[in-house]
Length: 294
Image 1 (cartoon, rainbow, N blue to C red):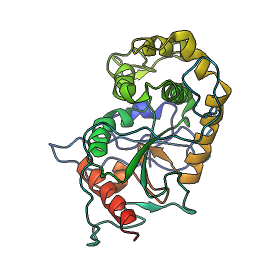
Image 2: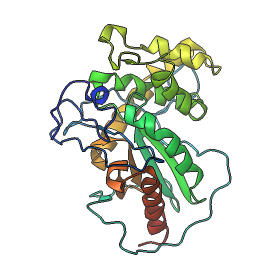
Image 3: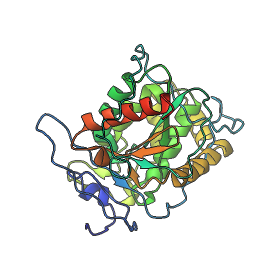
Image 4: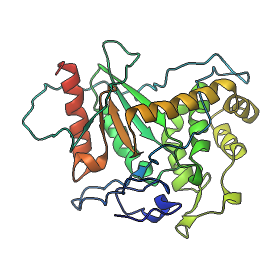
């Protein structure tokens, strides 16, 4: 069992789980992966996630818009993959590879299968995983709606700032095209890094990126910094952040990245198997299961 320490995400870069400093659940070490496959770290939430600020997506204006419960972000443009038939050959085991969400959470996409990524731009595991997530999204059939649910359960690592940034960017219509770039800003260029990337350890809190820094980042994508800050601090974004925190609790999410399929099933790269290919295969299998009504 791994000892809980502040900034455990930084300390567990090479592992498949990094835990909240006050979580009761032990982080799980990464299963050995083939040399050709990247293994996923993951970040765990506390047993009771710390409340982060709150959110409902506002409209693209400097004035707060009416609250919205929609957290969906359309998948990339490539044509949808054909639906796969559901075949249960016993490979995937409930309670081991994936977990039933009880009670199941309703979606607002009737006739569709909603696949949700729970993530944080400040999570090193999610940075490792996001190219795989992009590949998974491109392989989804036409009946899938992709949604994003940013977590804020690591305030000790500045996650609430990045949750707020996502909902503001979504409201302003730039969340899609900046999804990968935000990870790069946090983990490659260091523009929005909470960690000292050269030293491999967290920065002092006084050196963490601020909302003004995030606004400067989005200015490169045509967003007026004052407008961004106005939307980010709006009542509607605060409301949506609160709803996101509540949804994480309802889903039973304890680590990131986590994938939720249609509000019924939860899985992580750790639970899925030895490598990211298993994560993709299991997610698509659960989509086929839901599509078939099984």
